[in-house]
Image (cartoon, rainbow, N blue to C red):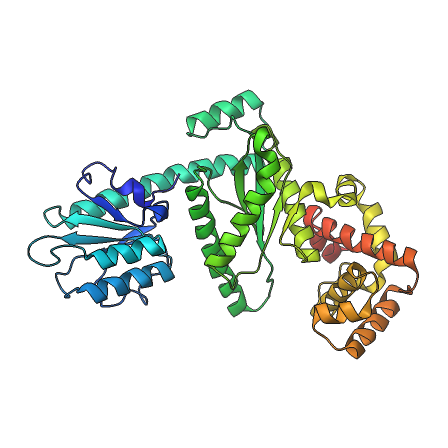
Length: 409
């Protein structure tokens, strides 16, 4: 679905460009071509660029080329194209190729007699055409996610027209960044991180030969992950490795993931997305594991299936009292404290350690919680009801637009 480094050498007119090193990184997605004019590219790239090095305006020695490889790998550049010929860079040093192989960073070699204007035009046109096709595919899939009703046969026909192979069963993976904020600067940073995560996820799908595009649904990034019935048992390990790979690429990202049940066709895509988002929310709420499968949700699946949302909302209000549906920072802190307290079966020492607060701070918060809810936390049935109420509240926030409901009431 996206143009990657290995595709460049197969584009019409670019057959003389050779792949020289870093083949393991050949599935890196090319976002745009960029001709490097400075000693360093670190301040001029944002990820996904295919960087061309000519040596015409600036002398490129062995050390500088190795520097560019390191910077490109560090800043998630798609790859490096080095122009060689008798006048400027005569050949690519072996040490540069060895470094690129160690870093799985693609290096391509372009002869000087292949004009740059031709190369950049061909690559740019391919990216534009790919983006146009990608938009059509995303529009089709977003319609399905939002409940677009159509016969499975017609959905399959449309998928085929768009070049999508929907013959294999699949799960939907929902990735969510934990941070939520109303601060403008923090929101900008969050948007940058989500864009970075989308780029990494696209790269990951390419590496695994998955042609489905990354989708955005509310706060989550979605990936359609094909999986045959015979390999369903290994899906958990495969996705755990995928999440760990994403975290290694961008350690500062606080990622949680949810996975739907295996689905037989695109007519069930909307249901699969709901399941994946529920599982992601469960992962965020509990935070003791980054990856949750829908089948692990247990009783939460029953709550989500109950159509009488007012009955669920009334139960939450009875149990959570003044904390119910509250989104202010203090209320969220208290609900986070209550969640960890319940997850640790009422053990204050473990709860305080998990939250990183003093025991006295925790004791003060628990008293506030008892006052706002109107319930004592010493009773085991009360703790069970509170735990279920917190779970139901998250389901209502996700499925029933409860924010708008409470604002209008």
